Length: 460
Image 1: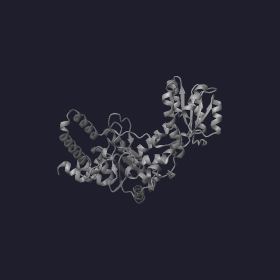
Image 2: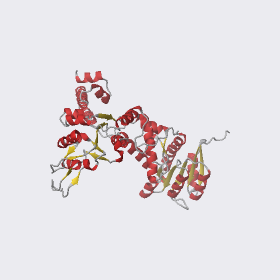
Image 3: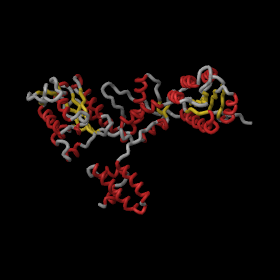
Image 4: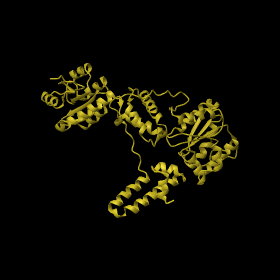
């Protein structure tokens, strides 16, 4: 008879020897070796001497319970899977076991049905973690002046523009989707400029009520409006000689746009409630996730201010257009989380890195950072696999709502399918074409169709 060729090891820990006999017969194969202990202390000794892939332990073992054993197992081997069993596990036991990294908590009465599939799944995960290659390159350190990580050509082109324009005082308009890092680019421009010894102040124009934004920027005199109990200097005065970053400039009210235009033209302004003309030497950097040219066309943004701000435009590419940067960014966030919370660094498997690269990332770098933070919070081992990445569900768009409504309608009126489908296609194509300001190529890309198909749907 050929000797067994064990490739994985399970450790059973239970005071009930009948249970140990039963579980051993159920789980041991020529590929899986089963070790047994009837107390937690001996179990720790076994784990310290032998590599174990999975521990199945009763919560009520002695001389310390299964939760403590779980912690000691994870301290010795962070990738070992642990399944706890109990007659009637309490809510607090389940929560605490999960918090400490248990794979599962099973009731004893369910073991005849659940033990084998749970163990097989746990062993499969253990094998994946053992063989998963950590193919993610080391994240380059973000130096003191540039906090952005990336090796992709689109981002490198952005860095080159920053290098060329930082030494000038030209206003810069930074455009890009939400979460792409527009403020980081603004800070890079400031830090590489002659103004870096002075302050950079950032203001989110969309987060301040219209009646307060003018005061925030230009200051106010005492009694100039309700609540103005003292004279206050605005941001232009405060960062004289420095840089003022106006985020979400597309949300700036028209009344404030007029006063900002004056500052850009001659460097002068007045506090709210004052006729005194003040001057300030401030470089303006602005950012928006809107199409300002379209906002100008729709009358929502002043054309003269648009051209004053858009002396140099820096377009930040969305994360989906620079997938080679995603693993580096993920590694950077993992390292930063480890430093911040003083914990052992969690690694990213090559397969997990590939899964991250395939995701569309509608929330861009901000979404990636949040995803990595959630993955670390939920991690049960120090190696993240694809199934450990908690991708956020995208919000239901209006287009999807229409599609869902269509499905419901077709279920009760299938004879109307042809006309309803044609109507829906026209509605969606028309809406997306309007959102892209008539850009047929971009509309086709968003809809996953060809330009010819869009023309046919619209009947043109």
